[in-house]
Image (cartoon, rainbow, N blue to C red):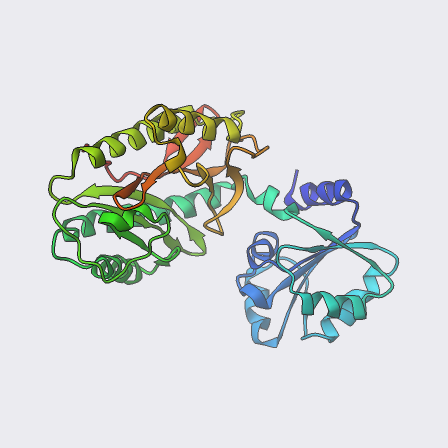
Length: 349
């Protein structure tokens, strides 16, 4: 079944005849167009059209197999209106701005506009072989850079210096940061999103490094917590508990596994170590054109893993005033189980 066949089936289930796609990642996966926010796709019962403006005429022709209409709003909306009279038209509620929705209502007054969520994202959750290779390349680069930077993580070095070293090496290799690099040392390790600061790393610190590469539009995501010198026994105990939870959850990944069950598995291990309340976020998420996408690996998730999904497993424990630990691997779900794409070693503390 093609992507558009899957999408039209999902549209029918959502009660819409057509879909206005405005999320840049969704536009790319449906059309191949990489022009980001300057591209839209209209999916109708008869076909699909890429909408962009004259700056992208050549790019649209080179990248997309879809017919393209080259114009700016409001001409874009007027052109699309001809196909939409009397139809129920879905729009991406999680992406479309209020102003853009008002424009649609003005020009598509003969259609019924319906907010929808996650229709294309569910299709994106299962990656094509080409997408898997793109993510694999992004993760291989991240592993390479982490290995090069690991010796820099030592007492007397600022967190910012570590982050800058990572970013510089990624950019020299033709990539970008997948997200703001997290370098959280010492007590700042208790901040799950502790982006790099001016703090100077000290002897005895645990340092959490959360990084990824964005290469050719696709992302990787990995976290390692490393020791500088000899951490306290309590920090070492927390590290070992998180590592146990992470390795158990990784081992359980496979097709047919409920995402919520994976979260519960890791959370129960940390709870047995007295760290259940210190695990302050979900176990993981999908990775692809966005660094956070479907499926969601959280306790309330209804997602079930399928072959071709790429997910993270990243339990953590965060103790205010002391520090924290997070360990994260990037995995491909396969027919027979899983493949761990992140190859950077995990330290034994």
